[in-house]
Length: 256
Length: 143
Image (cartoon, rainbow over all chains, first blue to last red; front, side, top):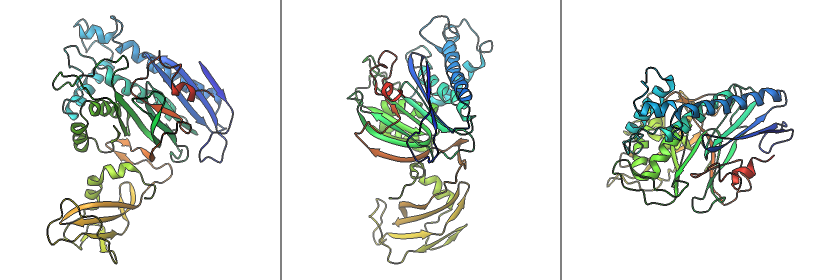
């Protein structure tokens, strides 16, 4: 589904920008791609870049989905696929999950509860990587949101302060209500909280369920790490804040 | 408070290292010249304040950092830096600044807001395909 319209977007631009929005359901979640393009950027170029974004996410889903038994990650998990024979992204993600476990000091752990499950890291990794297609477009500013995690930025030679994005943080206790607004020109916002179906989030260090309500939001340069830290901060905000101070310059725990 | 990028606040320690600030005052440490501000307010008593060490506020000349020129005002109490205020921040148009290889976020503002009418995107913890149609994001996705 794709829609584009000519118009003047709000913000500090004196120049009219064309707004593109594409929404698709990928990886079990809604993915919303917003682009503000200067008039000289061909509409087809923007549409093509957004198609590439969605194609990348589908490709990742085909490799890493844990909802189907035949994906490479599931076969690797069962010992049926050697990592050296698999798509190289499996090794890359595995290394990233190891790094995430280290820097979060165990608050994020893809190996917890027996089976390897990198899902919590794959999402931020994939969306951040997909945004590269938008970063190639001169004259655009973009916001790419997937399942509540968002990365924004611009193409080359653009001033990120000129077309900032206003990201509302949802009240974890009241759907559709916004309790914080973060305005940024480049960077990522990730929010982690209780599972959508009401299941418990477990603390990987102890196996105990996280009984806090609410959510944790992290703002930082890269959505992969913002997502990892938001997950860690929801498990234990105090420990995560300390680990962030040690290991994650440039990442800020904004809301809890 | 001026509009400053919040990432700088969160990396105060890194910035202080860049400035090669010395807590033995006043001094010319590296490229930083710190001068006692006339009538310095002293700021709030910090947690590290030692007896007999009154807080001092110091204005530094703009310093060239890898990110561009930065001017800071530092409050020191008891040998500890208790406050750092950015007086001048290096946001050049299109300029990339790097931390750990990633362009740092251009964080412009963070507000407590109950107003969902002036946002572009929503960040939340429980966004699923099934809940999308009734979600706030779906309203924002309309043109």
